[in-house]
Length: 151
Length: 142
Image (cartoon, each protein chain N blue to C red):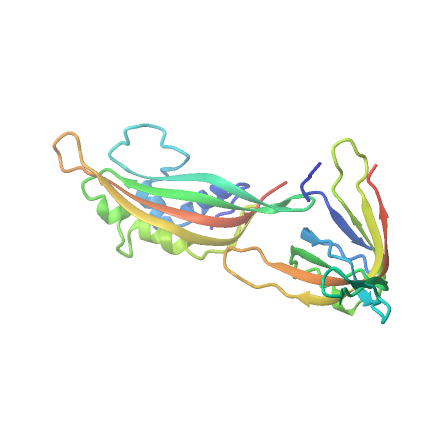
């Protein structure tokens, strides 16, 4: 992986995804934090990383430098062949992400990741409104990530 | 006024053991009751002449144990179970309006040390039990 400067868990997740050339090439760098820059999504493949529900840990003197954050990785495709991108075949981006993160531990930038646990793995398909066959496909993976934080 | 336990501390005078404590069980003190019933103990003539046992408190008080739970740091390496009796200070949380919390100072030593259970996604914690030896000196918060 190229040197990461990630200092939040969301950035660490993004950098870890970017480090997989298959995924990076497939989305051509379209990995966004929190939301896609345009909506409705263009006829392209994108990945959106959203961190929410951070649970800190406490000792009797205050917060410790560790948290568990729920991070959602949405793999979107809006092109007719999108299912092969989000789907569960071994070469799909969705499956590459699952394999990369499920059970992962390591250091990305300045973020130490104790473990990533897959909490939910869901698909949905949204029918086209224009009568075409261009369904919007999404694979949504929620990971519970226990990681270091800077206090 | 009831207050949370957050802010309580415990420090070890000799070993210097320190950790991120998540729980301090301050324990209990107990003493036996010594029976003092004798042949002349008064009967209850209104109730079939039964005699009620009488007792006095023992002059021996066991100040019990304190249970500590803390985040386990494999790098810390302190083996508290091997340490001698030392002076230990436990402070209660500082209440609003106070500048220092109430405190208990006592001699004690570790009688039990439980290593962590390792589970994916859970932070490791360990526990230890401190036996209180002798008097506990209390001071109020101020």
